[in-house]
Image 1 (cartoon, rainbow, N blue to C red):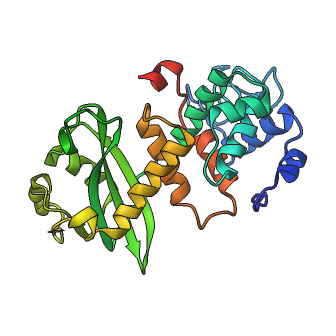
Image 2: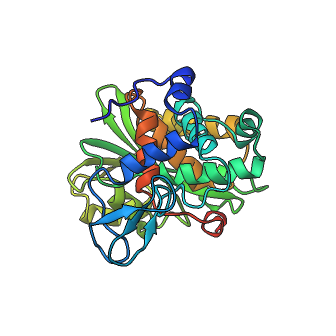
Length: 296
């Protein structure tokens, strides 16, 4: 089995991926690591396709390339530069803007922004590992301030619900979701997606959480306190995200994608080894994401 990329430096990256062919070979290895199966008819036998690294079904003649049916599908610029984007996004501690990617790679800013959005799709939580133990949940508003209006009624801001999993004296995981309102339906949809029903869930006294006690048996509600003094770890986690968003992206458009990017990196602080490879594999396993899907 191929050795994982351990804290890959830019020089090691350049040696491992000198050209498009090396990138295509890597994608082929990962895509068919568990064996080949035709996506159209399910046949497991193939022959070489017309292009290097492609495979043609011996039954229906359907041709698959290493990039087809992945988040690299129909990439419009050199595959090597796409790998560079994945590398920079995964290895920069605070992330990297599309403007900076454009400067480094000689691509248009819009091109970099669009492909980075695909990388951020790969950063979404799989939902396979639910939060357990001590968990805290709270909502906050992100975005511009509407004059004379505060809190949950602010129309110009987007409402976001966050959940943190606490271990020891720190926070081990963080998830967040943009919600339309702070109803029990919206809050519950997020909480059931990321939190185990047996977790010790702590929230403030907002009425939207009360009905969720039927699902989360150990949910308790306490006063938020002045400036969130009863939720200090949650408060720091939220302020950390808002500070990063202001400093890196300067706006709250496509907010869910930025939440996914931030929480992916936050939850993998301990995983400096293999982080680039982990994101590449997620790109291979992801489904094609079109421009229309991104802007919607």
